[in-house]
View (tube, rainbow over the protein chains, first blue to last red):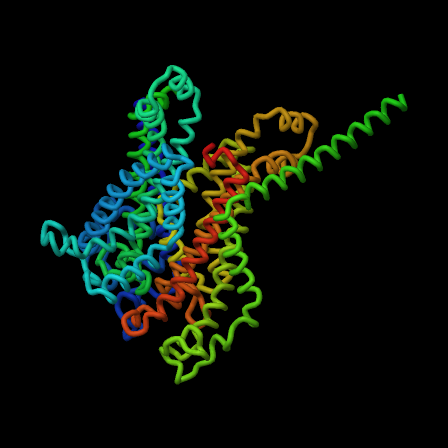
Length: 314
Length: 303
């Protein structure tokens, strides 16, 4: 048990190291001039050479990676090329927003999706199932930015009900927060609710087919009891494993939602940094999201272990 | 002796006939299962419609998608411009018609390549095991930890956003899913008696993979591929929407939506038509994909 956990943590660390190397490689392969990105294009040739050396661009990439990794481990992510501020500070300003959006969206989509999934599985073949499954299929396939734009049109332009953009934390101004968050949160959670609903349904149906359910039926237990005691307990456990993947989806999707609703989060920051070749910021953004997602995978695996005692037997 | 041989040949021929008959019967069953439900037919019709539009784009488009007309600038729908004009006075309808090509080509090309590469690597991982397997699995996990969109964005800035580049870059994002799935499927097949028999009879690894393992894992791969086409198209339009995808003169739906965004208030049709196209294509693909999944694996349908 302890061995498994340690093993799993080691695995996560290994993955983060691989990700960091791949990211460093990718970002530094970009055919953009880092010196110009940092100091502007109107510098003299001599200055250019000096700065080129100062950024260590004349050194081999492995050496630069080592240097960067050492600094990161000391908590120094470098200086942002566009903000001329330590990367840690820039990210610190933005990561809270994205983290808040992702966590709240996960907290909304899992219970709601599971509830709808249970309803469709229990009422399989009836109209509730048909309607909900169809809705889940339709919403699951819509790109978040299309939903966002259509909502923007309906609720901000046709009827001026909601503000078009911006973000305020709930502890700063709660009513404003709610008005600003409704549309982004809806767009961000829609896919999650639909996805979780579909997976809950198939997992529940899997459990309904098992022998122990037949036994429970032949014992004469009531359908309600069977669903509660046997189907749900077995059918809902695998859903936990989805949290990691969902979070990855949501973090990716928040890039679009932040973009449409002009929310100053990591997604917006990342698009900006790609467009303006802000190498340190790009590296930090990818690393932060990778860290968030890996930790989520780790936690869900351990949670799964805790919830399902059968796993530890393997 | 001779009679035994003839009998053997006859029985082999009979087996072969029976196998062919079984295959065609199961294909008919598949078609029946696929089109037995009206909603799937709807999806199939939608997909067929977009494919036809893509193929016959030059005949359907009413204007040259890149010719500009000052009078049509941001104009509303009219008789000559069915869906109005865009910011540069180009015919929106014609641009959307040509945009269908971009979406479908990128989606299908990326899916085919990632399915081929992913399946091959997955079977390889399952077959060789050991270090190869471990390296591939760790690589997959590392890939899963980064949102695909971030990787694609960086790669596009490195290699540029042409249609072919786009397809190849999006293909990379699809590989891990195919790899994991085909590996898991192949692992269950590897232990079966017929693979053991093939190994004992001295067949080459590649032949065993191709003739014995692959046919048995092909149906989940088809299911995943049909769903992956939609995901890829969504990704392509998303990247183009963020301004890092297909570059502007090429009419991609995502980039049209992006350039139309500032005019949401003044000329909403400019934004809403491409949004509707994208939504319709995604929904049709999804309905058809789900239909194919259910028809290939009836156990998923739930009784």
